[in-house]
Length: 247
Image (spheres, rainbow, N blue to C red):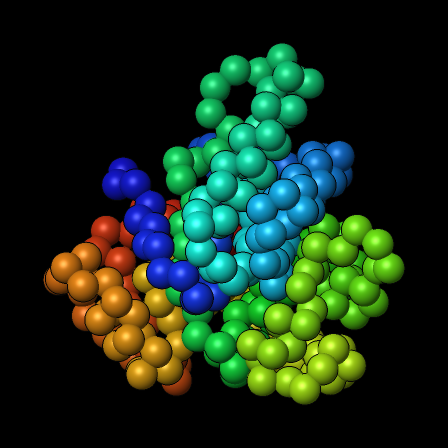
């Protein structure tokens, strides 16, 4: 299987997906999901990782971040993935790979496109049939967006509100609840592959701009249109075995 391609383009928002080796449920215990969240917090604290949203499931994670440059994302993912795997293997006296190759990253447009991706992440465990409401799954950004903690916060709510085109954090809370309620009413249990299978997703202008920034790396790729979204597809996507409901 080809390796997951990653592209460095500072200033963009990235939807990152990373799954456990052979899709094993290595994050099925709450303590391991807690530790992944702990190391996410440490990445924010140590490297200044700008976290916009996340969710930790039993066998993969979704992470929405803003690229602020200087290899912040790659260093952060190395810390989070490495420490989570190390702690699990030591506790279980286990050897071998914990993660399925490298993480995969998709550049996301801002505004309404970012909002749709944000809610798509929130609804992950609802689509899987594990919970009936995103608020019932502990290990996600839903709770922090709704009720920010006074200490040890992970989400940059100011940056998230700005990227969504909202005036302040109060409007973020209001709109986020409206978007979640609307998603719950319309939920059909189907995964939308477009959010995590390509190089970029958003408006036509946005994806064409990404193509231009890719330069020679964009050779052979084309812009696709689907469900009011434009997408630059990967040449050989490493994540063809997607995170569907069964997984």
